[in-house]
Length: 211
Image (tube, rainbow, N blue to C red; front, side, top):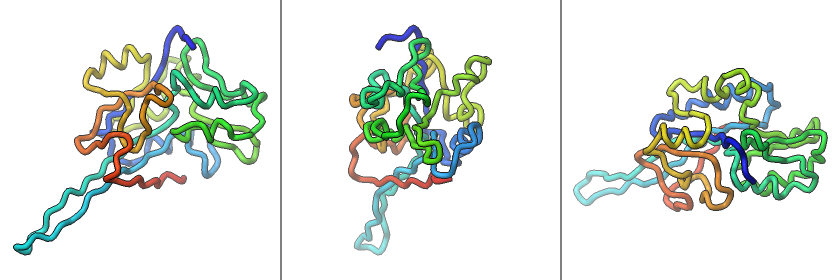
């Protein structure tokens, strides 16, 4: 798929405090039902304490937060999995959207997506997901999650501009995210100093985002 412009996100994990303001503002924008969170905040942590022979204690405990939403991937597996064409990638901006009138609620897209971006609205029986706040973009505004973040840890824009703006950012091969080769996500990460690579086994994920 080729697009004139490809929009995406930058997340600065070194700034994120796990406050979930981005998650709440996203949910408030569309008044999403309980259980549907287009943006979610995860805590990834691990390490252990060790008692030394002299009575002291050593530790290598670590933790950091990651704000996760739809990454509007260049190779979206949700689009490939959709049997009706409801899940599609817009040519004008590269955002992945759901055509509700075509969606049959089969949840194939949700099972395919490694980021848990597509989520079922059980009342309407259609899939929903982050739409990049496209109507706000048309008004010259940033997505709700970006504008609401008190630490300015999230940014959004054309990927070439984000890469130039954040030269120290890396591809999103950071735990708890999957390897970027799966979907080629349009996401850049400025890692936390404790960041572990995708697939790391020395930590665990705490999902406390059900609001």
